Image (tube, each protein chain N blue to C red):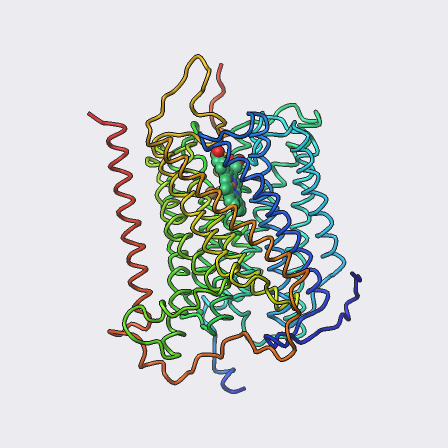
Length: 49
Length: 565
Ligand code: HEM
Ligand SMILES: [Cu+2]
């Protein structure tokens, strides 16, 4: 037990272990960089007259 | 099959010592069997398509060709693979964590929704008005129940993900495991996260398209459709990659007692997947007008390479861990004794190692290179593209799933695999057939042969086209490889269904099929020149050099096609 107390997981390990946080990352990053950015690209194509 | 309550009983598997929740076991079995049945359907459609694209055979008339192609794409890529993935999620969460499955009733709802959805879409395709290919690009119009079936199927899959996540919560609460999640479960967590993004994207695009097919929405912008559809279409491939990599880790552990070389490195590679893998969706839009190069290149190159790095890490650590385990068990001579003395006749092993090799050398190398905006111009919409992705989804994912199935037959169905000599041959037939198919049609694609095309010669048309003999030959060789692969696939279905129905029960005193954990002490004496896994290191360098050479060859080829003077 004392062993466990002296063991502090690193930040990376804490991120990796927090699967709900990983879920957020996995949804937000592609939504922003792929979907939103991509939709903006299409939406800003000027209309033909 | 009884729908049991939360207090479902367990059994302890004599072969593996695993504690198996019986409800979970029933659900894994049902999902896996449905998967295999659909693989048979999808493979049959694939055979018809291949026999039509083989110029000398040219089997189907045009309308049936496009129908078969749509059926093949949807059933093989979505239905077979996703049913199997759900089986994997349930197996991993319940059995590897010794936990009861959360919400069994919801899990049965998943089965029903996915069966009804798949059947609905399949019927729509057979009715002939929905030969829109699996991408169903608007403004091509399919029957409403084509889209509705896909939506129901996706809702079912989402429920499956929820049951998996819920099981993790229960396992954590009931403390059925210690410390962090085992790596194989962790891999499934990553696959599930990607699946949620995938299914959400699918819903965003398919629900409006469904309403449009009913006439409730006037029109859908084709460009917008393509952008959002590929958030779904490409991400679903990333679920597959993550799932089959997880299976590589699982099999390495089960068959060799191999431990990941570094848990931390493997998990960090999974973090790279979460952050960067989805960006690859843009590689489907590289030749689309209207989208900026900034968006294209940021997504497919800079960010994607971080995900590719993660794949290289997985591809290195899985064989590496097998090498370490083999060397520790005494096969420590030279560079490759550990590899020569692998159980090549065991289909669990051969499927897995062939999956690693085909995915890396065929699917991986070509995928990275064709995702470069300039190189993409050479092969866009040619039959090179199906060549590439049969290296990933058929040679990589499907073969890995086949390997795991051979493992699950004695463990979950408690039956011995029938026709052992043929089972030993099967992964080779499927793997080699798929490789010939993929490489040859990539050759044809490099010469410009289009994909999704009933008759590239335009016979009898005003504007015929004479292909170089080489292109014709590549198509023929490719489709012969395709037929070999279909034989391998059919053999798989026969062996699996046969083993379940008439296989002999596993004897009560059968020996544990999990290899003994590698002996700890010998760590320092194995390997060569300071490397624990020198053989794998050399193989990884071969892969890397292949990738770099292939990259430059393609730029050279591009320069000769599009001369700049
Ligand atoms: C069993 C051996 C297989 C054979 C002989 C085969 C053959 C083919 C052929 C000839 C095409 C058409 C290429 C074109 O004309 O553009 C094709 C397309 C395709 N195949 Fe396969 N295939 C096999 C297995 C698989 C598997 C296992 C999967 C998925 C897991 C798969 C997924 C696809 C997809 C998604 C397409 C694209 C459909 C489209 O363009 O809409 N195939 N296959
Ligand atoms: Cu893709």
